[in-house]
Amino acid sequence: FKSIALSTTSGQVEVVASRLKRMLEVNSGLEHLEELHLLGAQLSDEAGAAIAIALARAGTAVRVLILSSNTGLSRQAAHALGCLMAANNSIQKLQLVNCELGDEAGAELLEALARRSEASSALRVLDL
Image 1 (tube, rainbow, N blue to C red):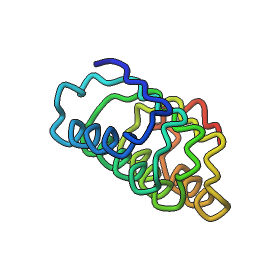
Image 2 (cartoon, rainbow, N blue to C red):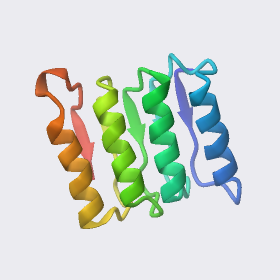
Image 3 (cartoon, one colour):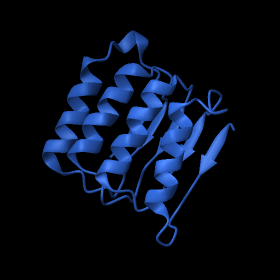
């Protein structure tokens, strides 16, 4: 897969997130994944964190990560996204619009991004 897109689904979000996490953990054909669009996928904080951690461990070359309109994302997901950004220098675009991260979670994510070396960062778009 080069691109995966999931949006609002009825009641299956946690199942899909869990399966995606497992696929990433075993690197099941996703080493070439470049784009992951989870716009409005109703992700919980735990599901968002699990996906971010799995992406960091999988060694994917994800360039675009769209998590906008997932109002369940909060501090746990922000922390995991910070870890992902530290581990994955290929991410060029990270969108978290309408996620209601809050001040603490947003600050934690920005601190993680600030720790990254500017020379090693491919990030071009950060949309909060």
